[in-house]
Every structure is written in C-alpha cells, then in structure tokens.
Image (cartoon, rainbow, N blue to C red; front, top):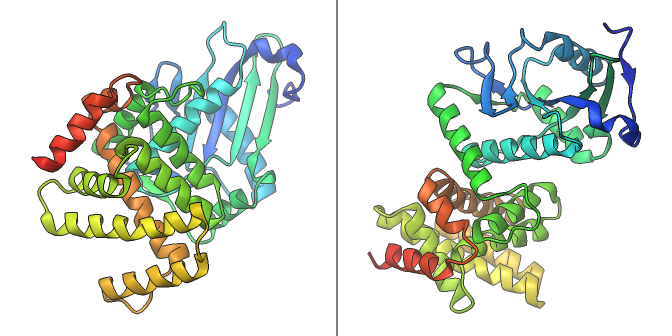
Length: 337
C-alpha cells in the first residue's frame, strides 16, 4: 500500500472533492488502559480511533514522527474524521479537532494541541496523503513536543466518567455553534476569546483575552467590575462563602490590571503592586504576574465555562443571541439567592 501513497499539496484543489479521511495526532493526550482499545465516537463520522482498526494510517504518521521528532511511537490519542461524500472542505475536520481539544482544555484546565495531521483521498482510485506538520509553523508547537516527550507532561483520560463529561462539553460546544465564525452569543464569544488565549504568548494580551472571555458571559455595560466579580464567585462557589470572597476579591483587584492595560496606566508599577498584594493575601514567598496571576485568572474563566458547558440548559441560555434579559435575570438571582 505504501508504494501507492503519493504526496498531495492542499493547494491542488483538483483532488479536494475526493478527500475522505482525516487523522490528527494529539501527543499530549492519552487514554487509560481501561478505554484505549476501542473506537470512541464523539459524533457521526468523528472518533478517537483505536490503534488496531486504524493501524495502517497510524503507521504512516508513526514513521513520520519517528523520523522527524525522534519519538519511538504515537501511543497517544489520534482523532479520525470521515468526510461525508458531499463534503468539499478539508477544514471541517480541523474544526472538529479544535472543538474536541477545547473540550479537553476546559475539563482539565490544561493545554493540549494537535501536532500532526494526515489527510487521505479516495483510495478506490489512487491513494494520496498530505502530512501537515504543524510544529513547523510555531515555536509554541515545538515547546509542546518538549513538554510531552521530555517533561512527560501528559493528560490522561482515566475513566469512562471523565470521558462522558468531555463528550458532554464537546456536544454543548456544538450547541454554542463554536465552529461558526459568524455567531455572536455570550457563550460563543467567551469560548472564542478563551481559545485565542492559548494561542497568544504575550502575557498582557493573554490577560486581556481572559478578561474579555469572562465578561462575555458575566458582564454588562454598567458596574462591570462588581457584576463580574460577584457573578463569577457565586457561579463557582454557590455554597462556599470563604471561596466566594476569595474569588470576588481576586477579580476586583485584577480589574486594576485590566484598566491599566486597556487605558494607559503605569503597567510595570501596577504589576508589581498586584504581585505584592497577592503575595500578602496568599501568605506565600513568591507570586508572579506572568505565571501565578495568569493561571489563577485562567482557572476562574475555565471554571465558569465548565459549569455552563456541563449543563445543557445553561449552555442553551448563554448561547442565545436574544435572551440577554433572561441571562441577566439568572445571574442576578444567582447572587441574590
């Protein structure tokens, strides 16, 4: 079979109508021994594929990985998408992969990405493949390879229960219509800003993206600092007053940084100020803006998104483009009790 396989440039649109298979290698994600030896359906035509059933194409990717990344095998997750016969757009598969990765990131509060993609056309006539080495395009992708295979920084989906929750988030991201770039709902906007947070390396912009993501679901035009702080604290900890106070105070203080970035303040001085405040509040010897602060803010954003996306009714409410009053009512009642 390998003798028939030919490289296909994606710019060669002559063959795009016959593309029918797509594989994506996720090196930082593994399945536990309990669930790894079967196809796991995410939706029609889209699976986490078993090693045995797709071994031919896993071998194509594995040989490439061995040669280019000095990695012995690709035992980590490979996603498989089967194009419908009438599909003409290869990027549909990439959208599905991106949605799944967002689900995993939200569930585990940890980054994970696709490093390698393999596309195959109709093998009834002739076999074409295109290896898309995403690590060629980004230093961040190369860092991910190092994280996974040098630092052993894996995420493992351990059991069926976690898998069900990830699939639920995946399905509800579909309700939020995250693959539609022309959708503008509170939840859709929040997820898109959150996804961009992971692609950005400049800390100040990462921070702003997290704030906008949080404001998209919890904010309004007036009293934004108080509303976002109180709503996030009650959404995350409805029955724990101590934790609510911690979240409320953190976000309220953090808004000073947001204002400084957005409206022209003494950024360096404000960063040092919040580092000092948080160090004292937490009683720790070190608290850094570029690591600890961003991680704390990210955890709040992800926590809020996770609560919404694990609840179908909340997903539908926050995905509405016309129910702003109902969303405000729900959030206000959450705080008032």
